Image (cartoon, rainbow, N blue to C red; front, side, top):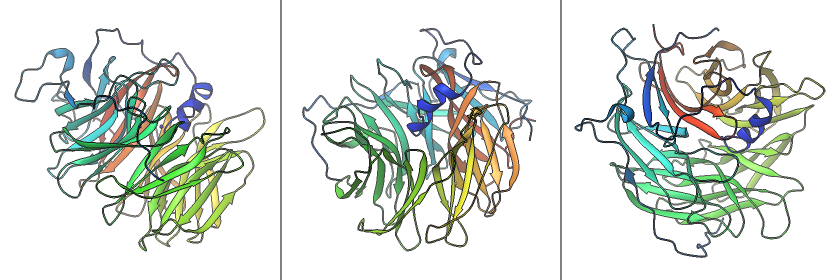
Amino acid sequence: MSAHHRALALVLLASLLPTGCGALAPTSTAVLVTTCLVTPGPTGAQLPPSATPAPPTATDVLPTPTDTPPPSSAATRVPPTATPSTWIRTFEGPDYGAFFDLVLTEDGNVLAVGTTNHLHVPPYSGDALFVKLTLDGDVLWERTWGGAGYEQAWAIAQADAEGAYIFGETDSYSAGDRDFFLLRIAPDGSEEWFKTYGGARREWPFGMLRLSNGDLLIYGFTEPELGGGRNRYALRVGPDGEVIWEYTIAGAGEEFVIDALETVEGDLVLAIVAEEDAKLVKLDADDTVRWEKHYQLAGWQYASQIAQTDDGGFLLAGFSMSGGSRRQADTWLAHCAPTGELEWEKSFGDAARDDYATSLIRLKDGTYLIGGIGNGILLSRVDRDGNVLWRRSLVGQAVYGAEGLLELDDGGYLVAGFIQITNGRSYDAILLRTDAKGQVGE
């Protein structure tokens, strides 16, 4: 989440997916949070900034529930005819762009993060956006964070104590073109501290992983000061945001760290996009490389997401596109042994449209839930062998992305994402809660 989300994917989507199928772009006065009910469809060292601008502030942009919000900015309750445990919230207008991640809080609510303005063409502007909601979809509070430039929040993780970490990109507070930022917030969403990471050129974030000892792994790509290209980039930082180590490799072509996981032994496995191929790299806790595997297959495949399997191996989910005239984008699945060898790979998707995986979680029963970009909010549940158990397109005939996934105790799912309004230029944010079958509504 133009190869968009995690950065790579939407740039690509702008050229692949059909346009003109979304709603009309919102007017400049529209700031709406609406409720929809739908019928489910078919089955690194830290470098200081070169300047020190005024620090950003976290600001309220919605009243608290004790206020009486105006109709244009309030979250509307699901009508009585709806199934109480499922809902859809769309956040419309210029103050909302997309949600990219979400997390359950210790008090039983949910925090979603994203951006007020999600753009893939200049002029870039917008702030990081974070919203706290109940599991019924009611907004408790909403904050924005940023400066005069462009900020987006890509990932969120709970802190050991109360509060959370938010990771993203900033050019308001960068040392160069754009840098990583790490923001620590209090339970009420106010800023406790923030740090930036990067050099004189551009860094682009793809995600954050909270490690078992409380450290954080943040990752994406970095551009070297001299020469072209984009290099894989990951930093391990402590709970205070201080850099423990930095990992970067300058390859022959462009390479991005697009996802990561921690093994039970404390090693780190990085999913790498390497031009038109996928790679896996296994590091120990001190960033020493244990092994690296390069999967060179026909066409274009990369893993945007990685999850551990019961046998100690890895399930990869991402993007596949064959060569020739068809140029169809599909969801790619692959399974790798604990030592990284590819054991099987397959693709599936809508035969008439481009769609591919952007989010993946392992469920309590050992199956997997996959979110995708394509026609509608795409959810797929697959078993350990990659067999599709069910597949849903939940909303509308337009381009949507399912960027963040959570499994709930009742077997349902929370999904964070976006809807494309104008190709590459305008998006609205969306959150939804499904039942255990991935459906919304009656």
